Every structure is written in C-alpha cells, then in structure tokens.
Image 1: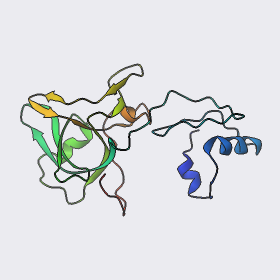
Image 2: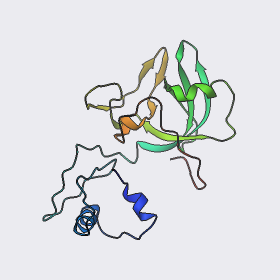
Image 3: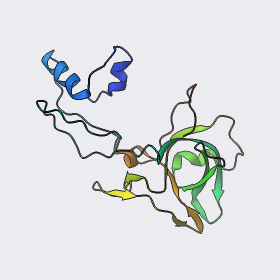
Image 4: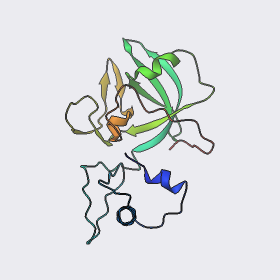
Length: 180
C-alpha cells in the first residue's frame, strides 16, 4: 500500500525527514519497503538505506498549479481541444491537448468554476505519457495541427505519480488555491 506523507501529516505532526520516519515506522512494526519520491529531490542519509525509484524532480518554476478557465474546440482536429489556462501570468495560456476528460467542457464558454490541474511550461522535464517504457522528455514548443503550443496540462503518468494517462489530473476545487 502506498501512503503519501501528506496524509500522515493530517493526523500527526511530522518533523523528521521521510527516511527517518520510514525507519521509525519499521521499528514500530509498520514495515516500509520502499520510498517513492514524486516531484521532490531525494534525500540521502548515511545509515538509512531505502530502495528508491528513478524519480523526477519538478522544476517549481515550470510545473505549476493551473486553472483552466475555458475549453475551446481545436479548429483543425476533432480529438484535440484548446484549454485556456490561468497560471498566474498576465494572460491566459492557450494549451493544445487531447485529454478526453476535457471534451465535456468544450465550447461552453468561460467556466463558472475553474478546473484545477497540474500545468507545465516549456522547458519542464516530464515523463513521456505515450511511451510504454519510462522515458523522460523536455517540453518544447511546437505546432500541433497548426497551432503553436508551448505548455501542457498533465496526466498522472507525465508527472510520475502513477501509470494513469486517460486524461489530465483534475483536482478537487479547494479554497485557497491560486494559479501559479
């Protein structure tokens, strides 16, 4: 079973590094077999050895919280849409995507409640969501069916959270969310 440290922090105060926490949990009879680092740098402690996976550190300047404000039809592709994303810049970023979980919002005008998602800018390092084997890629701007695109709304697979790639991450709307 995988349990995020953030879940544990909802119940108890944790003020030690995750490796020390894993050691303490194991000594208490709750065996920790593996530590997965998702989006954060891996820590190293001399006397604590835990198997870790190849992990991807998210660049906090390039992987952000985005608020999708509108979803428009792509003029030249039925299976692509244009997500208008607020990521804290002065203007919305137009992002070409084939995420099927956005189709229902297509051409309904500005959304009353934004769709919150992980949003990556050009230069971000991500996992290739279409590769069968783990493969990293650096996001580069390019034309997709005639429209220049330099950003991405992300699936769990592209961020290294899971193998899920059937749509982008849509987060539950929470008070206090702010784009960026």
